[in-house]
Image 1 (cartoon, rainbow, N blue to C red):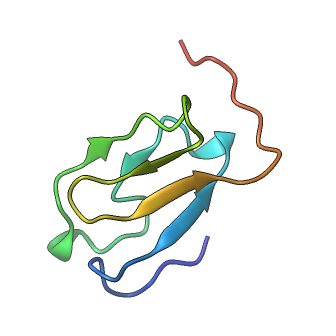
Image 2 (cartoon, one colour; image 1 turned 120 degrees about the vertical axis):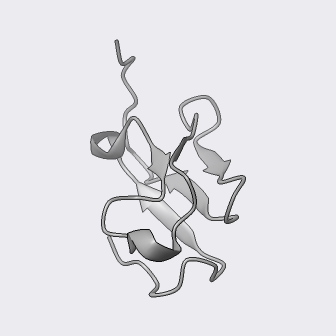
Length: 69
Protein backbone atom coordinates (compact mmCIF):
# COMPACT_ATOMS: atom_id res chain seq x y z
CA UNK A 1 0.00 0.00 0.00
CA UNK A 2 1.51 3.34 -1.06
CA UNK A 3 1.16 6.17 1.45
CA UNK A 4 2.05 9.83 1.07
CA UNK A 5 4.77 11.14 3.35
CA UNK A 6 2.54 13.79 4.95
CA UNK A 7 -0.50 12.84 6.99
CA UNK A 8 -2.58 15.84 5.95
CA UNK A 9 -2.27 15.34 2.18
CA UNK A 10 -5.67 14.57 0.69
CA UNK A 11 -5.64 10.93 -0.31
CA UNK A 12 -7.58 7.79 -1.06
CA UNK A 13 -6.35 4.46 0.26
CA UNK A 14 -7.71 1.19 -1.08
CA UNK A 15 -7.96 -1.57 1.50
CA UNK A 16 -8.88 -5.26 1.56
CA UNK A 17 -10.43 -7.56 4.12
CA UNK A 18 -6.92 -8.19 5.45
CA UNK A 19 -6.86 -4.57 6.69
CA UNK A 20 -9.96 -5.06 8.87
CA UNK A 21 -10.82 -3.97 11.43
CA UNK A 22 -9.90 -0.72 9.70
CA UNK A 23 -8.29 2.08 11.65
CA UNK A 24 -6.59 5.36 10.88
CA UNK A 25 -3.72 6.01 10.99
CA UNK A 26 -2.73 2.79 9.27
CA UNK A 27 0.37 0.80 10.19
CA UNK A 28 3.41 2.47 8.70
CA UNK A 29 2.35 6.05 9.45
CA UNK A 30 4.83 8.20 11.35
CA UNK A 31 3.53 8.31 14.90
CA UNK A 32 4.94 11.73 15.69
CA UNK A 33 2.55 13.50 13.31
CA UNK A 34 -0.44 11.16 13.54
CA UNK A 35 -3.80 11.76 15.17
CA UNK A 36 -5.30 9.38 17.74
CA UNK A 37 -6.21 5.96 16.36
CA UNK A 38 -9.83 5.76 15.32
CA UNK A 39 -11.59 2.63 14.06
CA UNK A 40 -13.60 3.18 10.89
CA UNK A 41 -16.77 1.26 9.90
CA UNK A 42 -16.13 0.58 6.22
CA UNK A 43 -18.18 -2.62 5.93
CA UNK A 44 -21.62 -1.02 5.35
CA UNK A 45 -20.88 1.31 2.43
CA UNK A 46 -17.52 0.13 1.13
CA UNK A 47 -15.85 3.45 1.88
CA UNK A 48 -15.39 5.76 4.85
CA UNK A 49 -13.73 9.10 5.64
CA UNK A 50 -11.44 9.54 8.61
CA UNK A 51 -12.94 12.29 10.78
CA UNK A 52 -9.48 13.49 11.83
CA UNK A 53 -7.44 13.75 8.63
CA UNK A 54 -10.00 13.35 5.84
CA UNK A 55 -8.39 10.28 4.30
CA UNK A 56 -10.90 8.34 2.23
CA UNK A 57 -10.62 4.58 2.68
CA UNK A 58 -12.20 2.49 -0.06
CA UNK A 59 -12.52 -1.27 -0.39
CA UNK A 60 -10.70 -2.62 -3.43
CA UNK A 61 -13.14 -3.89 -6.06
CA UNK A 62 -13.96 -7.54 -5.50
CA UNK A 63 -12.86 -7.54 -1.86
CA UNK A 64 -15.27 -9.77 0.08
CA UNK A 65 -16.30 -8.66 3.54
CA UNK A 66 -17.03 -11.37 6.07
CA UNK A 67 -18.42 -10.61 9.52
CA UNK A 68 -15.72 -10.23 12.17
CA UNK A 69 -16.43 -11.55 15.65
